Image (cartoon, rainbow, N blue to C red):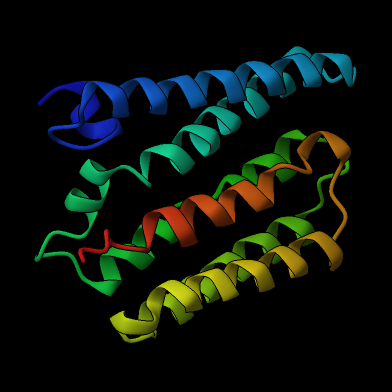
Length: 175
């Protein structure tokens, strides 16, 4: 199995690979530079950049046709999708690494994302897309108004919600 089979999906096209890794690299590089500019310790900047690599890359990769085919193959269930969402513990990693990113903020972002994912996966397939967009809009509202995170991490919750609710949970639509 190739590394791209694990990080993107089996049979990912060259364009999907380039766009996924390109977005991941651009996101990580941007956040790395912003983290240095914010005066964080190098280890904190590295943690932020690694999280950014996953978030920016994942938002693109999860939206690719090959990832849609892989994550929504017939043997995949709502439990698989919820498990994928649940293992995204990056809010807690940021609470550990980034000064001012509180454990309350981490729990709020994590639980908002998980509850929204539950709502989306419990929705009939015919309504899943609009419900996912509504859940994302509501999740964005909660995670950007109920808690305050440091400016250097303001990008995190919106991209997490896009990556998981819109890119990962929605299967490809065939007309």
